[in-house]
Image 1: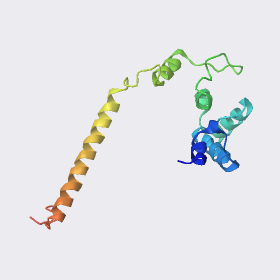
Image 2 (image 1 turned 180 degrees about the vertical axis):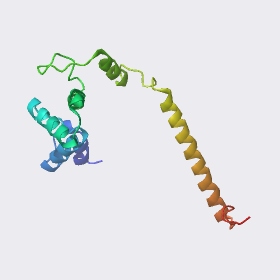
Image 3 (image 1 turned 60 degrees about the horizontal axis):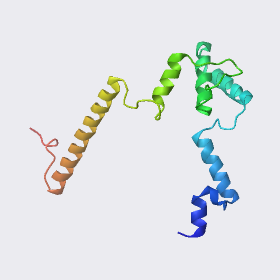
Image 4 (image 1 turned 120 degrees about the vertical axis):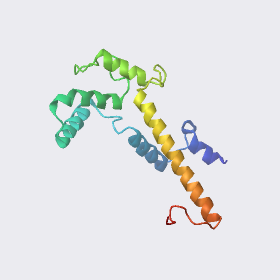
Length: 148
């Protein structure tokens, strides 16, 4: 690997050109479009979203909390100027989702049942595709195509 390629992989090396910086900026916007937005800009975005989607006003507080958490996952660690606060059950739910503090295996039973059903379906589909491929490679007709 050449020095130039190594510098592109290591941002601290300092050998970025304008194209690389633009690419990094675009990628960071794709990862989190709220990064760098001020409180006023966030409020405007949320208001426009609520207006555009016609979401009932009763959900406005949840939408605001979610947007601020999407911008910064520590948005509610300190007291906020706008008065938004997380309820204890919301805070507990966020802790459970945190891979460092929560338990990633503590999920609803129905989720595990869904994963099991989907896995079984994938196994059956794979088995069907393999058996059809085997029959075709041996020059046999598909039993499903034969008339009784």
